[in-house]
Length: 268
Image (cartoon, rainbow, N blue to C red; front, side, top):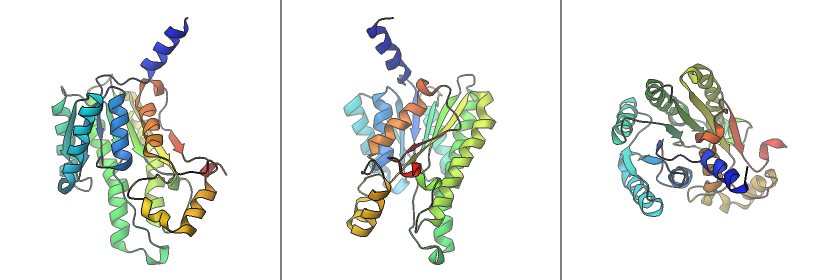
């Protein structure tokens, strides 16, 4: 086999030409980067944001068309509303020939509070978005992928290194992300017969406009950086590349796995 043939084989392994990908929370940061990476790999995109922030998803869709020549549709989504979830998945399926090949569950939030100070409202808000909403997105998309078996599909859940280790002011967040890691394993077993692969990525702190203000605190910044052997925060693109791998044919034998993108934090 020639070097050119080798290159062609590996390029195809990571290609998503024509696949339909639904990404939640694409107005900025990791979700936006994941949408761009999937579009660059050839996917057709359904990008989402909360109804009152839909203009951000629409801006992402415009950028996907301009930069990658991708087909991209913006759809409103509130993952705490099951009706909104159902309408979003239906819109995604209707947009592209009745197909849904990839779901990236990116929408999430954190309410930093010391454990003694966590309120019921904050706890419910974090768990409703990070776990309950993610599960029902999996369910709605998974039903569609089941119906198109044996083609199946790929689900990539955005967990966190905080689903594997603990950290201060993250009782609810760590709990929600640990649940995502184990939920990913459960769905892997239940849905393998339909050729639906379910995996997760677990990033460390990612440098985004939303997280940047946290690192203005020098004590917090020093603590985080000393825990990361590679000595830097992750970029949205670092995580997006892992998402593309798990969604692609290159990961055809990978399911139930959590791919940690943490610069070594959880290894020490």
